[in-house]
Image 1 (cartoon, rainbow, N blue to C red):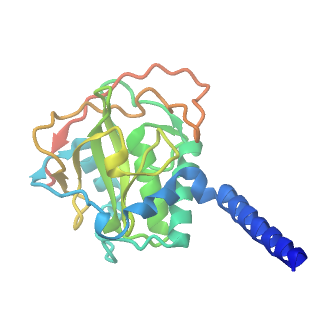
Image 2: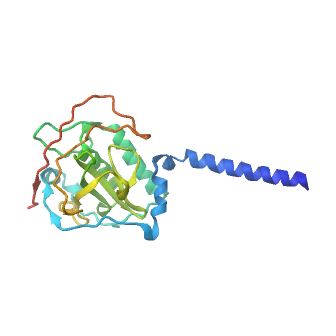
Image 3: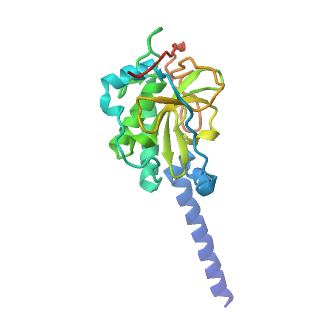
Length: 243
């Protein structure tokens, strides 16, 4: 009997150890995305859409040049974040972060582009949005947002509205975070029903200067700092009504 008890205890230890190995090697755990399951259900807090506001002028130009990226494609406004969608989110964020070298636009110019080898924060966000839409994500679930970093610079990111919260895909980090757990002060974002139009996310927040890639890719546990030394100067973000 004692021998059988020892065998049973040994099997339990082996199962626990194997479970730990699987959890540690899961790529979703490595990004910090899996921890967001704690925010599911009634604990999910969404970003509220305020009154309409002027769109960044560069976004107006972008939409004139890339009309297919600035229309409502239909589909759910909130994507169910199952295993497949989580994988797509992580792949798009990490892949674009590593594929594009952080670089500001020329002084006095602000150009929004996709699929570039070097670009600023909006270029990262727009490329991620395009890739996710190609994978079946709806336009309403993916919004470009403008915010202010803790150093006072303007910054653009992609926000994905999912069943596990409104998640931020930021070119400064590979970790995907809930919008409340970032270092950003939110200013404005594309509206849900029409990407051409923008709405405020918070009131009494000063209009930002375009920070592009800020100080470059910050060194974190997930992302190494770029070896390329580039002097970043924030460009001015201008705003315009869509006609």
